[in-house]
Amino acid sequence: MEEYLILMRLDLLTKETQPSPEQLQIYMQQYREWVNSIVTKKKFLSGTALSTEGRVIQHNTIVTDGPFVETKESLAGFITILAESFEEALGIAKQCPILLGEGNSVEIRKIMGIHKEE
Image (cartoon, rainbow, N blue to C red):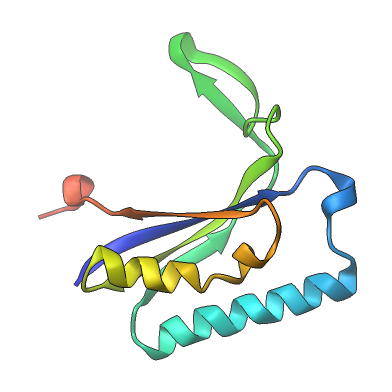
């Protein structure tokens, strides 16, 4: 089994695209069901949502408001999963309910063990 990171991106900044409280409840239920299906398969490792506030530090320690305020798509959160292959991880990621929203995206990356303690 290998570890994969699933990054979820959506427009968190444009007020017109934000869901109503009722829609948000439905979306969160769909998300919980998706995560629970991964937990049931014993493939879920961890995950969390991210705030929209942040700073970006660039070369020469230039600090700007962020994350990436010039783009509408923001990193909303991530989960880490276990999978036998990239194709299996891709299949799990394709079921993410974030993808039901127009303009939303999910990115999947294999986690390399460079920083792990031996």
